[in-house]
Length: 122
Image (spheres, rainbow, N blue to C red):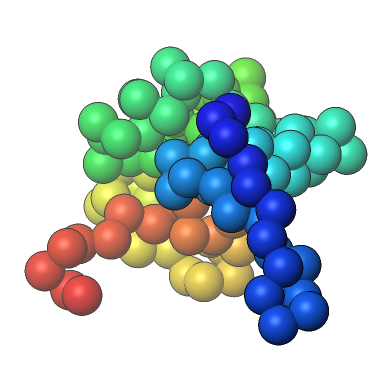
């Protein structure tokens, strides 16, 4: 951190620091907030998983495998048939919002994490 100057203008105290030091300070505060969430139990994902998700159009399969579940295990946990889940996972069927919400809950992810958004739809 560079030089920090203390100033008084119209009776109010101010601190003057470089823009780079200010940005470092903000980055540190954001990092502290993130680490506090992690310390409180918020789940983090490994880089390899994030990379795989970014390169795939099938996040459900990736999260299912990450959780160590087979199609049969996830289908049973969600309360649907294995072929139905397989069709949803392979984009042969869309799956109802209710079923997708149950899948997301079982995989411990947000519903948005399972949906691949088409950029042209925005």
